[in-house]
Amino acid sequence: MKKMFWVLFTIFFMILIIFIITGILNKGQDVDVILIGVSLPLTGDAAVWGKSQKNGYELALDEINNLNGINGRQIKLLYGDDKGMPKEGVSILRKFIEIDKIDALTGVANSSVALAYIPIINKEKLIFISSGASSPKLTGSSKYFFRTWPSDIAEAIAMAKYAKNILGIDSISCLYINNDYGIGLAEPFMDEFKSLGGKILGKELFEQNSTDMRTQLTKIKNQNPEAIYLAGNPREMARCIKQSRELGLRTQFLSISTLNDSEVFNLVRSEDIEGTIITDASFDENSNRKKAEQFIKSFYKKFNKSPGILANTAYDALMILVEAISKVGLDSDKIAEYLHNMDAFEGVAGSMNFTQGGDINRPIRISIARNGQFIVIKKDFKY
Image (tube, rainbow, N blue to C red):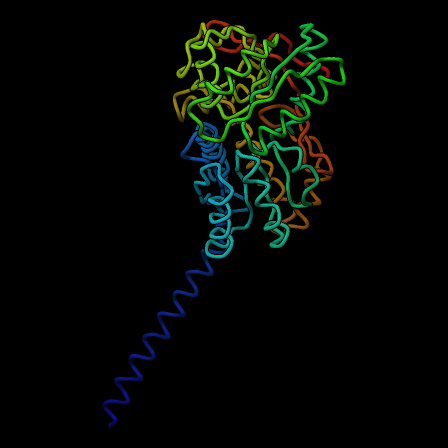
């Protein structure tokens, strides 16, 4: 009987020791590492945005941790593939919060995903700095939400004014993706263009990941507009342009920043996209700003390619988040207050700060497709 007692006692004691050691290790991990969730579309038609942003986050992470992290604490990024879909995104965010216990959230290229996150971050009081979501509905949606990519309204109004006042276009048909991103661009564009005296001859929508837009394009061809306003994910927009030319539609395309990606020129012939004009809030790789030049140099060294459209917004998002945490700690309310009142932050894209609605102020350029690339024709368009 005594022997059995001592056997059981020994087993109990060993289990207790294991729990104590595990607790110490876990406690040490919590103290030494700051966990940041990164939700991105790494597969699907929006993956070009997600992969570009991931590279920006990785570059920033290397620089931060090589400089001893935040007050000696290393940063760890946890990635989740939201596929650009709200349902997928919510599942990832739940895992980040309930299992991984993240300290903050960043990423998200698709506005519909970001909008699905807002009720959750409000409930959980979780800081969320998006590096790609652009829907106007996000402005002021949460005290915990911020973004380093401008609201769609800025691009939409700028293009409407440029089309009517500078190009002298009087009639336009719109072709755009049927989600918060496309609607958030097309509706303010149409409203502004009409307010300037222009005519909208028609509006055609396509679903995310669509591969055949010929039906919509045929309707637009029959409308005979002077120009087509196009808004969607890069691959979908490339298909629209390619299929329009196959249908004999040679109409002028007007579009958005996200068309300015090297992958687009791999999907459509340069002669088919030639002359397309876009509002351009993307990173200016020809900038002579010291911080921009260093970013490009470091990016090429690590990835051996151009940064692409959203790498810089991801880089800046993580750098801004880290600065806030280093100043006020991990309390979300204190971080939100710091960001709302932050002095101008010198980022890769220039000097920036946040509005009370969480929006970033960044310049809008006008660019045109020439010989397989977009070149700037107006550096800072006043809209």
